[in-house]
Structures are given as structure tokens and as C-alpha cells.
Length: 603
Image 1 (cartoon, rainbow, N blue to C red):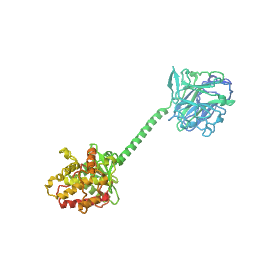
Image 2 (cartoon, one colour):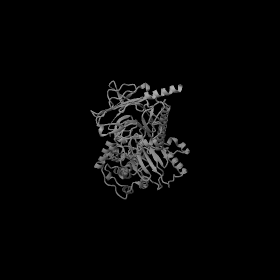
Image 3 (cartoon, rainbow, N blue to C red):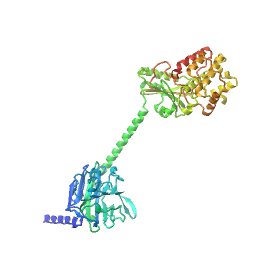
Image 4 (cartoon, rainbow, N blue to C red):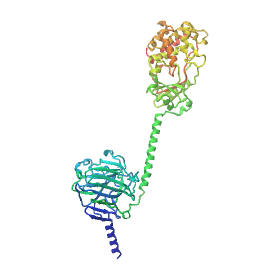
């Protein structure tokens, strides 16, 4: 008796949940006993829930009313259904309500094609397909507007019209997520007289909005054949979702009937996949962030990586970080190059303390005496020893820095920059001659190129020398500590030669070969006067441009030894180099030093 009652209860349930009212309309409050044809992943669950897809990737599923419907140019139609898209991990791709002349979709593919077309069949006029897509993945190949949209598709997944999923409630637009997992109502209505197709959506238990989401004027008789099947298609891609249809009604003679919510099948309980997806997403985002941070840290450290060995700890205070030198020279920018030679290039820079410096990078060669660890120890020890030298007339070496394949030395050296360098930032032989001319004047005057102490008239050495010369008191600039113990003619020669080397017009400066001839007495120094235009130009240039940071010309390879590794050197302001007399011995020493120093300047 119980079995008989159960049978009749099941029969009543089937009849009440699925009924074909006539050949032009039907109503399914659940799909137990429904007159549907399903394929691929699609199936009807035991509670009457129509399931189009599962978590299988790159798959599809279809469900169609078995009997085709007859259409002509006067046929309108109205359909109403409730669907839900429950994301697995990531969620994709979407589902579509479909009207098609054939239920054979074996050549179709899933993913962005939604189980309707493939690469060759998409956009063919012979498809005779009308679809309303509910898409949860942005497909750039179809010009999708976003990853949460509804579109009207005619023979193609390039939608004729689309809009972000939303509905109108009390004249206000409200967004709705297609992939929320919650049931959503959809109405699709076509008026044959006005040839107007409307698509409307809203959450379950909301009344049908007065304003549709999409409206498109279209003559479906140009699309449809005489017999058309109606149903649904769902698809998954790399990301997957469960695509469900809870209930469906269709009418060709009026408005589709409303579904009875209390009779609709329930969605399966939410598995922890959504939470798991969120957790996995957070973990993946964290891992990606860690990778980015690790990569950035590696690149940052690699950019400023230095070579440090235990034996260098004793020289800690004399060592500068590569990072500070890199920033001081604007990344060793070409615009900061002051000069170059066999050893490498010299860059101007500014430390964080605003101290002006010159940084020299000495390039490595395998034949360098510093290729061995012992040789490098000796070289660094020499650098540190030089740093301890303190003399007001010596350029001070501030320290060094080592990297793999390069050594950096740090100095400071105002007063040696030729005026044209402030405009061109390009070092030349003439600009190096200028620096050497300043050096000659320092030797005789026994002072720095720029002195901030003392009277303003003596602040800039070159201006002071020219002024004294104009007043016929040229020898007044000679270092008073010599106490007159020098040959006046030799002192005058060196002073005038220094001014000639610092001539305001670069082309008027002598070459180093000529300088040696003048100092040796083999060639007589040209008869120049302090009021000549070149010296006037020089004075005006100094007054206008001042003396930016520079370094003495790159007289590399002084001892004929091969260059060491890439090097940067930091120094303090440079001044004159001698306090001894300017007798014949001093002139001879100057000539010797010049001869040794001109290797990188040429003649």
C-alpha cells in the first residue's frame, strides 16, 4: 500500500513540475519528466534540477525541448526561466538561451564559444541561431565588454548588443553578479509587430522590472527557419562553473507564465569550493607577491651588489657603498662624465651631504696586477694609505668601493672645470689642458683654485692672478712662503703659461707638446697681455659660471702599467701641490711630471 501511494505521489509530482500546455507553450517547475533532450555533460538531477555542466574543464552541455516550434514572420514569443551559475575555482564560462534549427552541436566547442560554435562556424549566416548569452568571462576575440555581461547573439558570439548584468528597481540601476551562485530570473520577449527583442533580468522573488536590460530591433524571420528548437547551452573552459536551470516556461501566443518558486528544485548545498577558491586565491596572490618581492629584492641587490672580503673589514671607514656612489652620479650617467682615459671614466657627483665629488671607474683587465687577491689587498692598502695623507695643497682621496670586475675611487676637486664644460658636459683635450693650467698656477701661488676665506678679491685664483698682472704686480701672487727664493723669470713663465692654458677660448689653449717645449725653453712663450680678449672672456666666464666640480684630467697609465679593475675614487677639494722653492730644480721636476702625465691627453 505504501509503495502504491509513493508511486502516485511521484506521478503527481512529475505532472505538477513538468507540463506541456499545448504545442505552442510549456511550463517546467523543475524538470522531472520534462520533454527534454540532453547531451554531453547535461543531465536532470533527482530533484528535478537541470544541470548543464560540472567541474570538467573545456566541456559543454545542452538541453532542448524535444519538439521543434513552427515560426513565421507573424510569430512573437515569450520565455521566462530561472538559472544559477555556481563557480568552482575561478568560474567560467557561461550559459545561453538558444533558438536553433538543429540540436546537433557535436562540432561546437566549449569555453568562450559557449558550446554553440567553433572557430570556423562562428559568424556564419547559415547558422540561423539566436542566443541570449549570460557570460562570466571576458572574451577579447568577441569584443566582450566585461566578465559579467548579457548579450544578444545572432549567428555569432560577437554580440549585436550587450550590457553589464544589472536590473532596474524603483528606477534605480542595480548590478547583479551572474557568478554569485544565487538564482536569477530572466525574461526574453519578442514582439513580431514591432520587431523588438527585450531581455530583462532580476534576482529571484523580485517583480519583473519595467525597464529591460537590452532592447534590439530585429526581424527574426530573417534569422529563423520554419522549425526551430529552443533550449539552453552551457560551457566550461580552463575555469569551471556549475550551470543550472531551475525552471522554465515558454509561450508563442502570449506572455510566458510565471514559475512557482515553492515548487522549484533547490540548488545543491554550497560546497566549500567557494571558500577554498578564496583561500587558494589568497595563497596564490601571496605567493605571487612573495615572488615579486623576492625578484625585486634580488634585482635591487644585484644592481648595488658589492664585492666584500674579510680582509677589507679593517678598511671599513674608507669604503663607500656602491649604492651611494650610484645615486651620487645619477647612475653613472653619461651626462655626468668629466673625462676618460686608459684607466676608465671620471664622473661628477654629489653625496647626500651635498659634498661635491669625482668618481673614477677603473676598468678591469686580466693582466692587471690586481687580478690576484694579494695584489688587490696591496692596492686597497695603498688607497687607504693615500687617504690618510692630509695636506692643504693635495687632492684628498676619500675612499673606495669594490664590485665584481670593477673598483671605484672617490675624490673632490672644485676649480678644475673648463667654462665650456658647464654648457657641453663633454670633456676634451682642451678641457684637460685647462685643468693642467690651474695646476700650474696652484704650484706657483701655493693656494687652492677657490678660497672662501680671506678677501673677496682673492677668492678665485685665476681672477686674482689676472688682476695682479694688469697692475704690473704679477709676482705678488707667488707663494710668500718661498721668501723670494725663486727665479723670477721662471715663476713668470709658469704663471703666464698657466693663464694661457686656462684661456677662455678652448682653441687658443696650447697642446701638451707645446707646454713641454715652453717649460724646456726650446720655444719662447707667446707675448700675451692680461687685457687680451681671451683672458677677458675667461674672467667673465668665471664670474658667470663659477667653478663647478671637476677632476684633474685623466692622466691614466702614468707608470705604463695596465689598468686595474673598474674603480671609483672619492676626494676632497684639490689645491696646489708644492711648498718648495721655484728654482731650476722645481721647473725640472714640473717638466718631468708633465711628461709622465700627458699619456691620455695627446700632443
